[in-house]
Every structure is written in structure tokens, then in C-alpha cells.
Amino acid sequence: MSSKADKARLGKGAKEIEKAKKQAEQVKAATVGPLAIPKCPRPIQEILRDRVKVFDGHIGLKIADDTTIEESLVILDWATGMSNHVGFMIGDVINFGRSKWGEKYNQALNQTGRAYSTLAHYASVAARITPDKRHGALSFDHHRTILTLGDAAKIATVLKEVGEQAEKGHAPTTKELRIKVQQLTPRKVKKLKTVTSGKGKRKAKPEPPPYEPDAAEQSKLDFVENTAKELAQAIKDGEVFKIGGKLDNTEKRRWLNFLQPVVDFYKALERVTGY
Image (cartoon, rainbow, N blue to C red):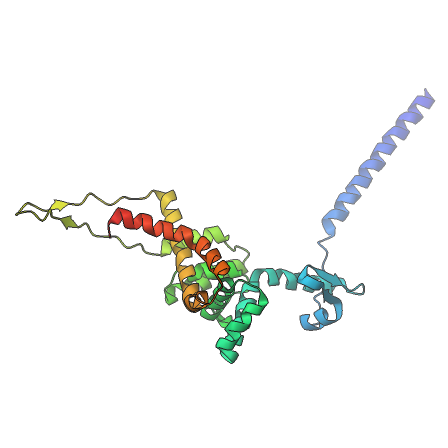
């Protein structure tokens, strides 16, 4: 009997010890806060110079072995910012070159092998939203989406509003922002016209009411319209008409194929309207 009693006491003691260990672990987990890394005192320029090497072709980074954890977090923040704002960086470089060398620089861009229309678009956005008006918490795509508002006052208001939201950690997606911009862009409502047959004094026949697209259709129309405006502005800013005439036939054909859907759309509307 005594042996059974001893075993029972030992078993109970073991359970109590296990319970105490679990309680201790829970207390420890509750009292230990998140890992706090002190802020790095070195400027990003020094860290990049001493710790970072860019691989050929810009396919990645080689980080020095003696990089501290504080420095690695600064490098991570820098790399993330690069991906969000590289469009502005490209545009600023192009605008600098144009202001200093003019047409000579535009011709020199051909040596980069980059699509000129894309570079011109970056330059246009960077010129229209100067550095003092840009928000670090918003991406380049956010900024150029807001530009489609067209009105300078609206652009400034939405940039400020959305920028403040982003700084609080509530940045909208590009799609959400596009919807907001569409809602703020007034659509022109055409007045009903009356037509006559041209024979005698017959009464004018009212035109049927205009077709009203549903929400999904209107969203598609608004998206294409805003994108087309950006394309038209990029063509105008980059004087692409002049450049296109100088291209060889192969490159001209590539551009014609690229723009063919726009031409087809125009012809389809022309047939329907009879203009």
C-alpha cells in the first residue's frame, strides 16, 4: 500500500512540476516584448558605399559580411523605396538631361536601348509632380494615377489626402485609388439632339435616349479613357511624331502593330457615328 501511495505522490508531484514550468514559460513570453533594434546612426550613402555591391546587370545585391543588423535594416528600407519610386528616379534623370543638353540628349537616349515612350512617360510624371509634392509613403503608380484627374487643384488635394492615409499605414491599392479618381472625374453628359429628315416641314424626330453603360462597363470605359489620356500626353511630351518618322521600316511596323487596336476602335466608332 505504501508503495502505491508513494507512486501516487510522485505522479502528482511530476504533474505539478510540469504545470509550474508551463506557467513560467507563459509569464516569460508575456513579459518579453518584441525585439527592439536601435536606430542606425550612419547615413544611407555611407552604408551603401561600404556595405553594398550591385551585381552586374542590376540583378541583385552583395552585402558585406561585417554589415550590422541596424545597417541591414537601412539597406532593406532603401531597396524597398527604390522599387516604389524608381519611376521618379528615371524621370528626374531624363528631365535633367533634357534641361542641360536639349535635343542632343533625346537622341542620346536611343543608345540606352530602352523604349523611348516609356522613358518619356516617366519624365512627364516626374515633371508634373516635382519632388516637393511627392509622398514617400505612396508609390510612383499612386502618383501617376492621381495625375489622371487633370485638374491641378484636385491633384494637390488628393495627393495630400491619400498621402496622409498612407503615412498612417492605410495606403489604398492602385485599383482602389483608380476607382476614387474615376468618381472624382466628372463625365460630360451629352444633350439630346433633334434631327429632321430634310423633306418638307415634317416634325423633328427626337433621337433615342443615349445608351447608359452599367457600372462594370463604365469602369472599363473610364480606365481606357484615363490610360489613353496618359498615352496621348506621353506622345505629345516626347514629340514621338517627329521621332517616328526617323525610324526604320521594321521599327515603324512594330509601332503600327502596337497602335492598331486604337485605330480599329476609332474606325469602329466612325462607322457607327457616320462622321
